[in-house]
Length: 81
Image (tube, rainbow, N blue to C red; front, side):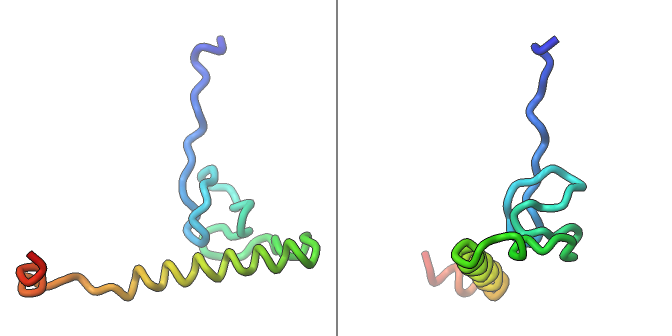
C-alpha cells in the first residue's frame, strides 16, 4: 500500500556536502568514500564546467575556513561577555 511509503534517507556527501543516498556515488562531485570514481566535469560543456569548478572551489574554501578556527579558551570566552 502507498500509505507506508517512506522518504529515502539522505546523507551529506563528505566531499561537497550535497545530499545523496548512502553507499552511492555522489552525482554532484563524483566522489565515493573520499575517492573520485566518476569525472563529473568531463561530461559538461565548457560553460557549465567552469561554473561547477567555481562552486567546488568555494565549498573547499569554506571547509578549510571552518577547520582553521580554534576553539576559544575560557579566558577568551570571559572577555566576549
